[in-house]
Amino acid sequence: MWALQELERKFEKYGRVMEARVVRNPSTGESRGFGFVAMDHDDEVDEVSDLFNEAFPSLSPCATFSKTVLAVDILSLQTCNCMSSTPPHAASFTSRVTTPSLPR
Image (cartoon, rainbow, N blue to C red):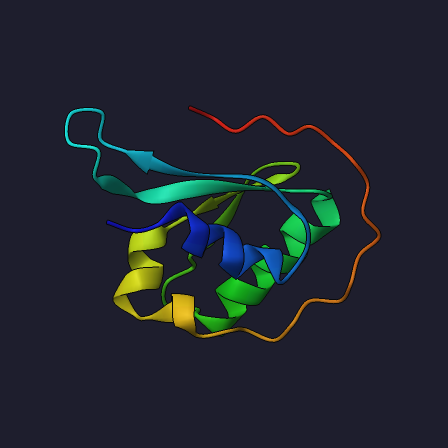
């Protein structure tokens, strides 16, 4: 089973992760292959999405779900072992406190 901590660790390199969620099958508890990552600022979301999608263009593993939330194709990232690969580091951002709400 894919760990939530792996998802958080991967994205915290690029900014403050406010919340992360791996979507699971309610009956089995197994990952459904995607999740959401809420970042502290919308610039971080745009930068991270661009970095991952440029580094792994055949997968396009990230999509902007809302202003501060990324939808992440975890299954694609695992399949190509992208979670152990690191795209170029994002520029540092000024942290601003927000309270994003992840979809359930």
